[in-house]
Image 1 (cartoon, rainbow, N blue to C red):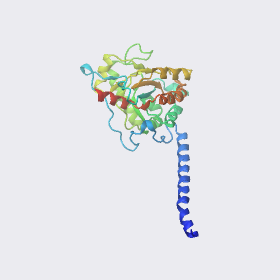
Image 2: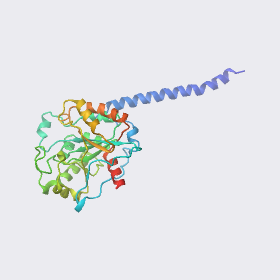
Image 3: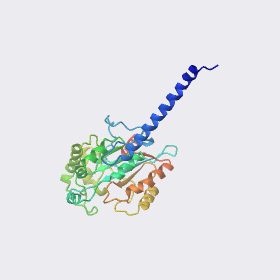
Image 4: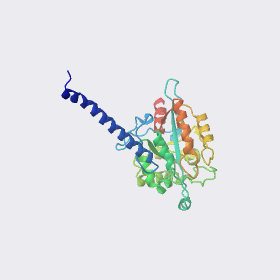
Length: 304
């Protein structure tokens, strides 16, 4: 016969389980609320997802980013995409975002033009997508809190897009042209701007403004020890007005190991965030895993 005292003892584990379940549910709701408040330059990073399980914690320095060996005659190496993985391997894709702002655009920013994109960064966090941000030094100066926030989030990495966003060759989308004698200094000035903003661990990757380069530019940057990063998928998001068209172009172009070039500027790429809401789930449906550029370069370096 079961006594009242025995029934009370049997009920204790059930009551404890209910209390634990309630506590976990409240904790989950709290984390969800914090994540929904996250934005470029503010809020807590989203919890780790499947695409970033191997990323370091924010409190620990990441392991050194992989770089490629110098090219012929010691020129800066150029990376376009990772090796196309065999069919049995999980395909990877790297989304990259240029945070563009040229050295002479300060008056436009002062007048209210926005070169940042908080909603885009918040969407990447909410969907737990690793990404690489190629910042200009001038952008980091204009938005230091956002640069620091992106740089401290283990989901992301910050790479160099020059200080001035001036061209490293002639005839590059109408950009002003840097002389070869100033190219390395312009790159190093961007790294200095990152440090001043609080970006502690930028990766040693460089993206040429407009993607324009030649041997003279590769020679000028060689002493800096960076790997130049290009892309194999052009999103077409610059000044685009149709988010669906941007998404379709990316989805049509992505292959295993791809690097996609996009932009993180509200004024110049207003549809990019909306396009991501289609691109990310569609690529996941196709089995793609999102990685940062450093992982793509590591894969290319490992295959030699």
